[in-house]
Image 1 (tube, rainbow over the protein chains, first blue to last red):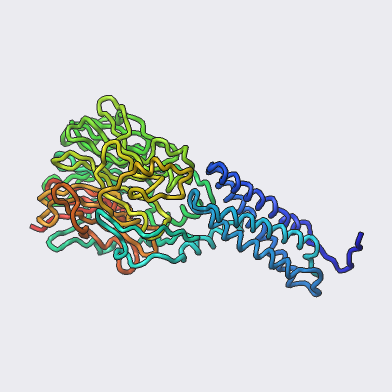
Image 2: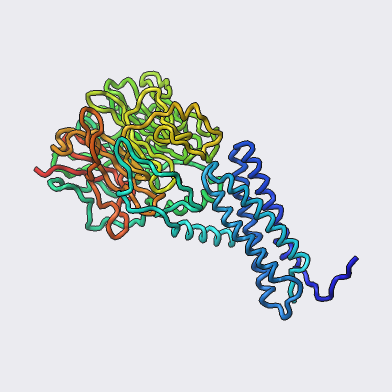
Length: 137
Length: 431
């Protein structure tokens, strides 16, 4: 296996928890959207709305950690800038998705489902990048 | 939860600054055959919430030759009024609803909309106003009955005062001149009260007093609380006064906020608040005669066969069955009161209905916030509505009052309940 470079620096436990937590939250939202589209049972849409709100809280704090790390770093190692930008994109599109989900009944579909899928991919990419090489020192 | 709070504020700010809308009344299609624009679905609904401010020295503006007086102030959210045979006025005061907040949106929206309403606690009572000497000053203001549950609709027939609480239709025995109920009311029948997203129960009684009509609003804007909670909602019930037995009289009426019986014809009429978030000029609130057995579209369609794709699963059979209402009042005006006029109101306002418009929230350029008169001829609405009482929302953008119930006093006056200023206004002709 490859040897880790000496400068590699990963997020701390709280930062990592917040970051990784975005994945199951946004995944849950996507699955809820699919269930709503299949059944028209409004409770799934309610679940999706709250899961997205939760995802935004986690992603928001993770973004603050990442931004502070980036600004305070003496030496930019890994891909901290890419990581911060990915998290920002996740949060902004997540917010758009939250508004999309605030529309009444089926007005949130199908755009809400598409946005949920995009936000999940962005959350995965942020988490992957962040945990792998998003640190800065 | 700090971030969530910040998020709420951010969303609120975005909601408030969201743009849309056009030139107030001018773009509003009113009358029997309104032109309906395409549906719009913006990411955020356009909003303009009333900014309440006291009336101070100001009053509503009424037509030349008419005067307006505040006959009662410091009420606890007056909604509908009723003139008793001896001229006393009964005012229903209260606020209802127990709708759970299901989405983050509900939390945010309820905070925003609360800004435009009174902060006074629900009165849950009936107040009686009396002008014994007929000088236009209602010197007696007394509680007729209390401990009611958000009373709204009022009607009187055959010695009984009927009150539509948000959960039940009840009646008080009433003898002429009484100023206080002789005891607790007796229940005619329970009314649908789960959730009560639209909690107001409007009421009218047939001329012979045998049939009562209760308007029951939907439990959502457009089924966003699920189809299951819409059973027995968005309809008018006909209730037998003697037995309390009920049947749906007309359905698909999203929120029939006021009912009245047309003199002579004995026909039932209503004003209905239609759905939000399809754009500033959709969907028109309307005035209509209520045809027995008819379906008026909600939630599947509006103004006949205009399908609302938000209600899923759709129901093409119901859409096909939907009938058009009689007369558009304009979108988002929030008509909450209706009553037929009488010749004593003056030549210009002799034949027609008065409509109280609470005013919009889902519109960048506010509409409503006034009392209008819809002229009739041959028993049907004909012609453009005429402003009767305005100035509730001032040119300074501040809102001083919001009209709800309107009642024509047989002496030749219009009683207007104002649930923002907690005032009852009386408009009379100058002698």
